[in-house]
Image 1 (tube, each protein chain N blue to C red):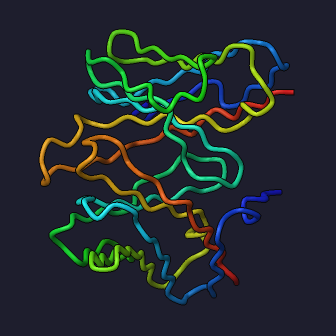
Image 2 (image 1 turned 45 degrees about the vertical axis):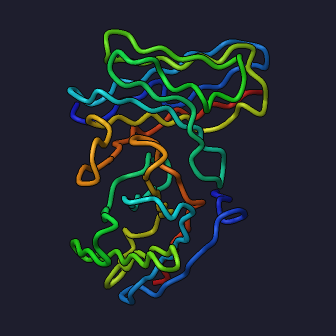
Length: 113
Length: 119
């Protein structure tokens, strides 16, 4: 079995409800942000990104919100499905490097039937 | 295949042995990254290659770790004299050129990883 929940924050959501996963980023100079989804036994998979000149960006069933004032990023997943069960990572990229992503700790999303 | 390919998918080794992990990036991607992910943890940057530039090795945890990238494509991560604390999933990612402006993206595409177990 998986024990990632021992270290990772966990969010449990009823199937069909909306999920909101939060992330506090570290560098006020960061100007690009990205969300990844990692399913068990797989590598992280790109979901959506946003630049700092925007405060909201929508994809298919997902929305990313950026609040630069408080250095906060969130990922909203509409009508959560069992296939959304995964660990979600936020990452930032900014002035210090044009290639290094600074990764968040991750949040495990559990879907209740 | 179209994605990043890593091999082997699983590796079990004895303490003190050397291991080599392989990564085949997406064709045309000039940037290649290695990360380490311990159970229940986030991603720990190890090393970055970009074209013919000198690699950024700032994340390598010790001199037992090394990596090379031949011909700007395939990369090998080598761990010498493995220790139990080296047990983790080693992930490789590739991307197009790094960001050169605020308008550019930095989307890294990951392989499935190599799960290394050191007994």
